[in-house]
Image (cartoon, rainbow over all chains, first blue to last red; front, side):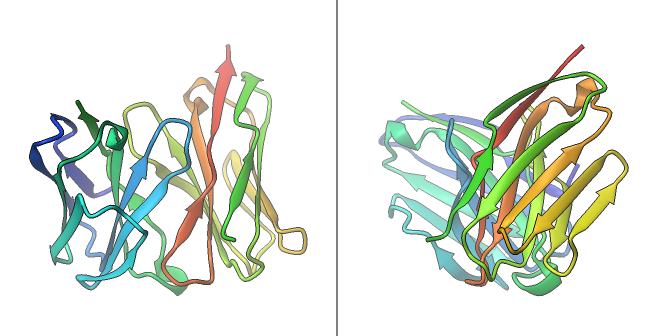
Amino acid sequence: ETGVTQTPRHLVMGMTNKKSLKCEQHLGHNAMYWYKQSAKKPLELMFVYSLEERVENNSVPSRFSPECPNSSHLFLHLHTLQPEDSALYLCASSQGTSGSTDTQYFGPGTRLTVL
Amino acid sequence: GENVEQHPSTLSVQEGDSAVIKCTYSDSASNYFPWYKQELGKGPQLIIDIRSNVGEKKDQRIAVTLNKTAKHFSLHITETQPEDSAVYFCAARYSSASKIIFGSGTRLSIRP
């Protein structure tokens, strides 16, 4: 266990549904990340939060909406998704975002299927 | 642009032999290079990392080497075991602050 948990582990949703992914870290870290992992593609960084402020938004469509209410929790709100959004969504955390504090620890991921 | 290339994409090794995975990066200012192992149904797990002030780092059967001049780094696994079978990702931290770029992964299979 890495100290980063994600729920749900599996999610199937229709294109008109609204759902949310949840990530929680128990490491006392100050930065949290959302990644998308598709088959045969590198991990794609979606969002970065540092001290609850968004510091990176990697040209992600607005149908993905992140929320970071505190340094331990990160959400990804989903609405009107497309079938090509089906992927493994990974959350990660790190102590900081620079110097020697940027080592990232990943959760197990949420396997999302959009019908 | 920001890019990390990883080779090979698949690697099959006889149990007990060594495995080597290589990565190249494009930003000469990159200073942090982690390696992750991802098993089926799990998230990536950090197995070793190296910073640009050293050329080599070892942890039991795993070692990483860094050649800053050539902008490449490699993962070496010796005395491979069945539990080493997984997908391995290299990554490089670019000088643009919070972004770590990942390679496309290597699927390592250990033959009994």
